[in-house]
Amino acid sequence: MASYSELVQKILSVPHQESLGPGHATSEARALLEQLTPQSVVAPAPVADQHMAMACCSALWLYHNYLDHSHRISQQIPTVEGSFWHGIMHRREGDFGNSKYWFRRVGRHPVFEPLAQAARELATQLPTDDQSEYLKSLQSWDPFAWIDLCQAVVEGESLSEQLCLAIQRREWELLFDYCYSRATV
Image (cartoon, rainbow, N blue to C red; front, top):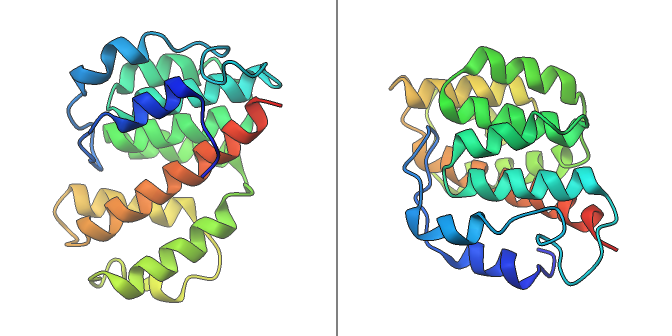
C-alpha cells in the first residue's frame, strides 16, 4: 500500500462493515468523508491528476458503504478508473447488468494481473465451491465472471462469501493504490 495522506489514514482507520451488497453506511466515518475533495485526499501534496484524486474520493465513500455518494463522484470521472469504480459500485448495489456495462468500458486494466494472482492465492487458502473453483487456476482476470460469482453469492447460489469478500477487499486495495499513486506527485 502507498503512503496515504493523514485524512485518508483516518478514514481507513474507522472500522467498517464489508459486504458484497450495499452494506450499512459507517456513520462514524461521515464527518471525515465530508472533508474529501481532490485536494484534501492527497494533502499536503499537490494534486497531479484531478480525475485520479476524484477516483480516490469515490473509493473512500464506497469503502464505508455510501454507495450513492460514491456513484455521484464516479459518474463524473470520464476515465477508465471512473468506470472501474462505477462498475464496482453497481455490482455492490446488486445491479449486475449495469456493472458489466461499466466494466466493458474499463477494458483491460493494469490492476487485473495482480488481482488475478491475489484471487488465485486466496482461492487456495479459503473454501471454494462449484461456482468459485475456477479461481484456483485463474490465468487472467475476468471481471464478468467475477460479477457473476458475486451475484451467485448474493443470491444464495454459492457459499463462497468469505472468499469473495477477501477478493473484493484486494480489488479495492489494488485499485485505490493505483489511483492514489497517480493522484499526487
